[in-house]
Image 1: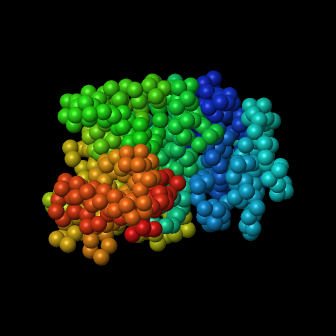
Image 2: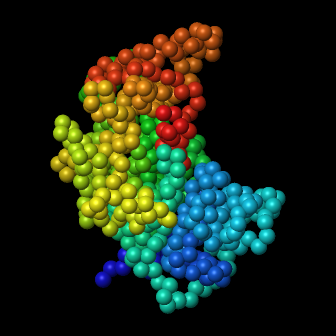
Image 3: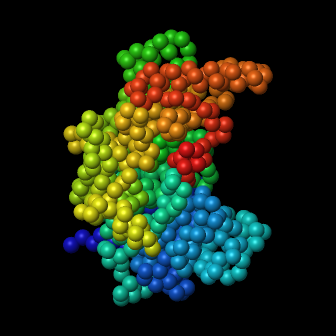
Length: 555
């Protein structure tokens, strides 16, 4: 009988793929699965020396790197509970999570040590530098941190041997991870996921997204995010693939040569990244002169140009991609049309932290335009209170990948489920011929004056199609639909020489542009969904670490 625990999963992988590479920095020496097994044992022994036992919470505060994965697998293998913390959280939020989770030990990278090492936490958990698994015996000064771990090689470090202890083997229903969400509503919730939640989600994911031991995964999203952790880390570990991490921010200047070197076969991304690539690099090339613009404005011409651009984009990504997985938010219709017509090997998944996370997905060959694919096997998904006209309602899900609950919050756990046990996702969607379509968030939906439902995400997608708009947000204020747009200043300066305009001339130009943009969008939507006013957003929208706009700050 198969054991659905992370320990059983990684034990099997380390046995089957001992000589295969498992984890690596882009410019580093890969750790094989055999070496990974020894490092996991080393870290388990280290934690036991510091009094960590089954059920204790152990946090990780670090940028992506191979030792992050080693620590995660060691914590869960010994039956402790991993608390992955996003480094982009504010320091006060980080300290709150450490305190609220009751973490007894924190693995922290030297880069992020100052966020907790100099804090006045009572009680202060044991700190271990993640770069080399060195316990912190006394506070480290900035001088001591600088360059200290730069040349550390995990393969040459001394290893401890972890003896097997009866009673510490994790069970399927034991808590494995405690993930604090980076929600757009202004507060974090501790989501409790069991071993079965996570490992079953990995197994179900593999039925849709084919992963094998020769795959190379380029990791660019933060590992504490459930999407990257389950799909981009645990799933490759289950199948014996190798995951590569950057030691620099994933800018275009860093990513392009890296992808040519690694030639990844699988990548995970969020819509914002591929939308920026399309708007800044792809679309301008397809419409760079009058002839191409005329060609692009015809359906056959657009499809031909998309196929051409798709081949070039695939080469930019290294030329070996067979799976480009997109998740975390709604993808722009314009960008998906490009990927679809280009024959790019993309897939869109849907899920939440509370569902471990994947709920629906499909293989690139079975994509349905604007759909997130089919519901995973064994899960029950229903549309609650569907609109009689559209079939759109709240997506509710039930199954063994749904969370145990919210940590230390029984009331919120109870309120998140229906009386018959379905988890209420808060997302709006519909099911058509077995495929799930996402329309937006329940809390974002606007009820028009005529009683019709308006989905802000659909209006935002139309606004974002304009080359002058980098990002937008639509909301309701005093019964009217308002849009905020953050404009592409570089494009306006280049095309309209705005630097030479006076302030009043510039303001008049921008107001005229916003009026024309509003009128264009309103001509292409239902009368009840028309935007009353557009406002220029002077600065980029403040976002969560997973690049979702913090809507509560602007509406």
